[in-house]
Length: 416
Image (cartoon, rainbow, N blue to C red; front, side):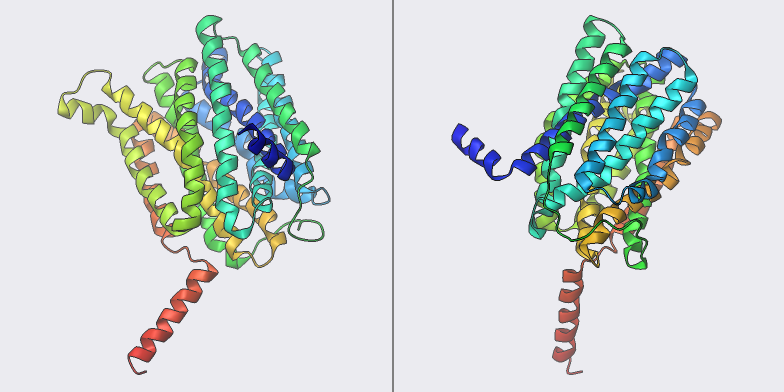
């Protein structure tokens, strides 16, 4: 067994270095996502409206990622990823050292976000470059599994710190920042074999990719509701602590290690359209769970803690479904006119999904304050239905070819 693993490392050194880098950044992400909302509540005591408004500057780098990645066109993808990981690490270290200073908190949050968003398309592109066309889903699934598996380490660290030392944000953010810098080192050491010659394109916007852009935009709205308001419900309505989110992330990550790899294989076998439509259908039920958990348990006379357990289940399932993003990446790779289009188009997709996700938290916060939090998730359910409709239109060149051949066969059979 040990010899087999050693042989795989010898045969695929770039893939191993890539997965280690993704794993290290996954640790950082696990620390940040399980800590940040409680950090804002404990240190700054902000309202739901302010929390929603904070997403605008935090997501601004995501909106600009196509331009930022295009400006670095002269660097190969792993070097861009290394630079991005460095930004992430320095941002987290800064958050751990500044204390209750609002302006510096914004600055280091934006730096962290800058690194996160630039690394996203590079990660997907590098993963697909490290496999054949028939292995795109598998490679993306392996990267997703490494990332969510690493969330166990980050979340477990937060859990132990919170439960045994207390809410020490300095220690947790410094640990997460150090993990990101380790990821930067492994990205820098990589020398992936790119599948195209010449530098990456600076910016790509093509009508052919319009459905991909629409799917990314819908994902941006769905994503931001759950990143911003799902944990905020648990924090402010049910009084959950950071250690709760650490435990939920551990559960998500343990399941996700197997789920994400299986999802990658499913994308290759089942196709992007079916996976994306199933994602939208499940999201409808998750949204309704967040909105009406109290009503459901009250109607059936279930115990008092059941609404929280329903929300725990919704939280874990939603975390797992974030891996469906890989289906959009594979779809883009299949319809791309040339290999050089993939990386900048992935960046453009992130820019478009952030164009909407920057606005969703603000209006979601207003909806929460004026009516109630339930209506935020009712609106999200409507977005999920829109995702199902858009995903039903997904077609790859091979599917279009098969459909054309079937049409010709039907015409011949009808004697036309």
